[in-house]
Image 1 (tube, rainbow, N blue to C red):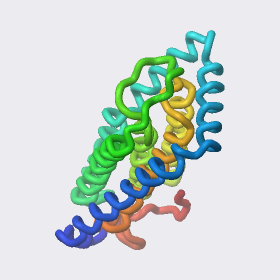
Image 2 (image 1 turned 135 degrees about the vertical axis):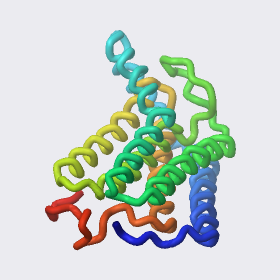
Image 3 (image 1 turned 30 degrees about the horizontal axis):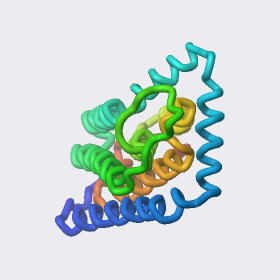
Image 4 (image 1 turned 30 degrees about the vertical axis):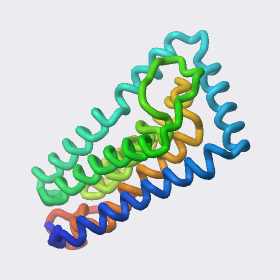
Length: 232
């Protein structure tokens, strides 16, 4: 197994500060640039109108979109990350510390996404086909699926077989794309909400992985390193 760098207080504080700064930047961009922009509002209105129209009169599509909204929420995304990290740790593909740090990054992303919503307080589109509470910017589903996608891709780098690494990566990316589309089809978010949710989630996860210590993939030449060279 690779040697983890220690989880020092300085690293934790640095990661938190960078994540908070990113959240504040996304909130400021929304509050002062995107939401006041007439061009962005036109794109947002177009997205909601056409998204809702795409599933209007198609009950099965509507039901599928609602189901996916349930399955792509943080209550599903982060348990998947935790289970994957746990399995890899038990199989000694990563350290237990790496698994814990990965889950901690996910939970931080969840909390910061909620905080960003409370800072901006953008109302949801009025044409939503389902009733959803809370604020609109940025999309919480988009934020959490982006965090989860980055974390899953980082974790599966430790898998021994290339087809598992590539397959899990493609599934994670497909899930993120489907979630983004789902929020617009249901009319519960504007395009700008979804895009900035994806940006915020990906940025938080990448910053956390860069600053916090644990090496998620076995180092080259270690007994647990993948036996082939192909990796996503």
